[in-house]
Image 1: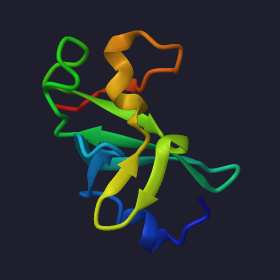
Image 2: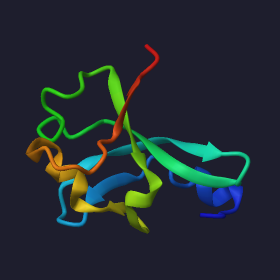
Image 3: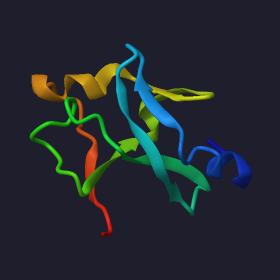
Length: 101
């Protein structure tokens, strides 16, 4: 994604849902690759507690790889791979990120 700075910052605060309509979390920040000037991930907070039960605690967020993003509009839609975390599929998991307290 080679978006203008105003487009990147507009992602912050948007709710993130899977393709199946399951709430995942809220965009807190974006991960950038400065060499390629592209977004590589979305840092999520306010996570769906049921979806991440036993995987993250209240002070931890996750970084979702940007390749999982399917669409950006009023909300961000990502692949339903996030819902398969419990199934143990081979798809790489979202990274956890310790939030500053």
